[in-house]
Length: 299
Image (cartoon, rainbow, N blue to C red; front, side, top):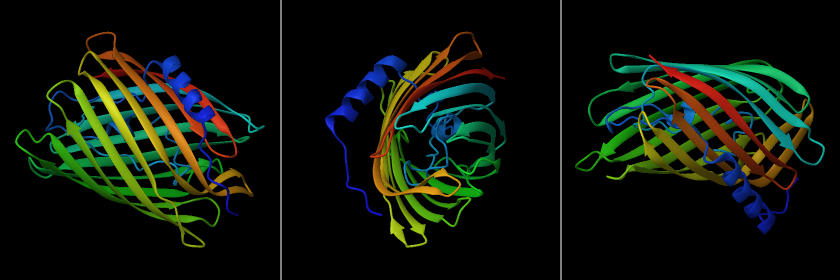
């Protein structure tokens, strides 16, 4: 079915209140060097559930490095219109060896009355001082909302005198636990200012089958901070969702949604700290809001 596109002032006001409450969240840890590389979006997406392939752009690999670290935490979100709550926990880690930056995560979630565990791993490889690429794949045990299989691949190029501009192109494949299959293309960029500010943007063109439903989505993110001190990131996403599974046999289809995520990553000691994420989601069917909290340690 086709749902009338909705945005509304209520959504905007609620987005702002979530940001004030969370004090910045999407905890992305960036390196002091523009030449380093690993996706801060994928490294810190405790709430970036891959159960909604049309809602968010794929993780964007950038030159922001979480070189060697482990992190663990949990989340709790409340949904309106009788959809209950989401809750869960995660653990992830990143290890650098030579030109490779390996990453892995385990994410256990309770959503829409069901529970399951998502497992994923990936690698970012530096070809030379200008080019690097990344691949990632994941699957799940239980949880109808998790993908049966998901894979993403990206290629990145650094530009300009300080190599402060990075362009990213990628492809993704998503197999839900029902008949839906998604193929997507991603294009985005990251710009490092001389001041401690980083601007990211991207757009994802997605085609969902059956039906060849086109569902584009985009995002923009602004980060402020320095390595070993703090990073505060505000990320806004918007687009069309071809479908969303809310039950083993229940699907929401063809609608617009908006997200706002705020992250505050704070170093407490020399090599450890905390990660706070505030997350808000709006669609014609329900609103979702909550937070995630985690501890990280570098080694």
